[in-house]
Length: 250
Image (cartoon, rainbow, N blue to C red; front, top):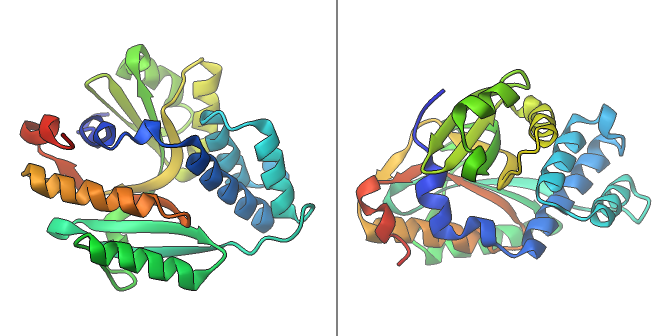
C-alpha cells in the first residue's frame, strides 16, 4: 500500500480542515436528508444513510442536527426538494473537475457554477468528458502520531481498506465505497480521530502543476466552487510538484 499523498501537499494549502463548521454541517445534513429520503431512516437497512452518519460522526456533527436531518429526509418535518446534480468541468492547466451538488434550485446551481468557472479560468465540460478519470472511493485522512501505515493497516485492512498512503505526518486511507461505514467503525473503535471522512471521487491519473501561479489558480477556483451553497464537493485530478509546494498560497 503506497503512493503519493496529494492531501499532504495540497489540502493544508487550502486550509481544508479549518473551513467553517457551518458549511461542513450543512453539506452533511443535505446528504443525510437525501439518503433518508431515498432509502428510509433506518441506517441498518440503508447503506447510504449509514455512510452519511459515519461521515457526520467523524466531523463531530451534533446529534440534534443529525436527528433533524433524518426526520426532514423521511418527511416527519416536511418534505425536502433537494436533487443531486453532477457537473463536469475543466479548470486552469486542463485540470479535470467533478463538482457534486445538492440543490433545491437547479437553475441557480447551474448559473453559479458556470459563473464561478468562467471567472476563474475554467469551463463546463460535456457529460462523460471527465467522469471516466475518477473512481468513487471511501476516503479517510489521519494526521499526527496515528499516521502510521503498519498501525492503520492492522486496524482497517479487514474492514475493507485497499490503499494507505503516508507522507509528512499525513495518512490517507482509501477503500471501496461500500466499505465506508465498516472502515469508519474500525477507526472509531481503535480511538483513531480523522481529519476527513467521506465517499469521494479519486482521480486515477493526475496533472502535475509545476509553477506556483498555476497551482494558485487551480486552488483558487476550487475554493470559490466549494464556497457555493449548493456545492457538496469538488474533486480534481492534479497534484502540486514537490519543489514548489511550500510556496503555494503564500
